[in-house]
Image (cartoon, one colour):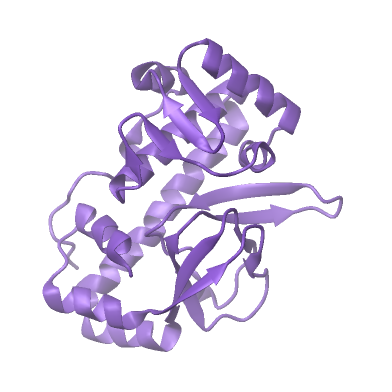
Length: 242
């Protein structure tokens, strides 16, 4: 059920057999939800954290006029709100962008892991730090990159993250979200995003059609976006230690 999560962890640190068993015992589910459903609401008390098994989740905040800003996309294998273990509630909402399957990790069981498996605790801490690194890069995009650069950067990032969990192959990957949702990631209007995607297609860089992204020129797309995967921490470090 959680093979993608295990694969993601093992890319960046060693996970022993007893630790893997502890992770598998940690989660409950699966639980399925349709697209565009709020899974966790801002301010509600939390006693478990969500592990995404399949589909796409988004963190978002909205304004009183109905405008919505997506601040992070989670892919299969991600803990979407592990930070809720210490915060006890979220300051934002967690939304299914597509139909999703999730597992829940009760915070009481996370307590047990922190006592018994300190290395695994550090691995989970690493994952929350990685989320923060991705958030910083999104902030740079929203603040300093122009529209086409933002789109190019996000496509590079998503392909890189989906490759980690085996959810992308070759030049293509599934991204079954609407142009409106994509626009909400980039802080743009739907009309502007449509124009940006046309420019990427006409430049021979990338194409986004019918829920599938095809990267025709990865080097060119990275150059346009000034994409540097350093913030994704894809290298395998030494075993995490105190």
